[in-house]
Image (cartoon, rainbow, N blue to C red; front, top):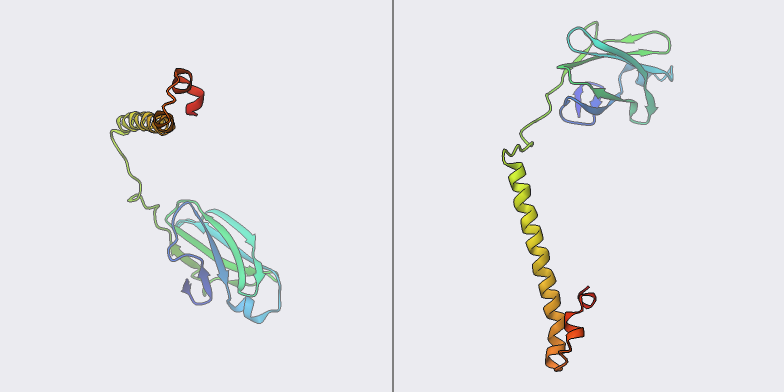
Length: 159
């Protein structure tokens, strides 16, 4: 998704505690005079946790992966190998980081009770399956009138 001319993200929305890919096709990519480009970035209004990493040049532009550490905004600018900056005409590039959505997290108050019920149901189901398997194995013997107690009561024959 292109949020600003010549800057693309691999997602529609920047979400905290996620990794994003930034692609840059701005003036340093277009002039093709220098093969080195760095993204200089920080978080929040005060540019906390400032980092600078070298971007990889690809056919789609310069690219880098950045971990969004939970602050409310991502701020960045670009610097080439000659020390020239693309800082959005002195304003830098700034994008809001959305909080991690919590609407998909289900909190169940009686979780332990549910696990107990599920455990009882699972044990009951295992007993039903064992009974059905025993009946299926016994039916041919019943119709052949071979009801030898060794055959019918042998638990190894049920497995």
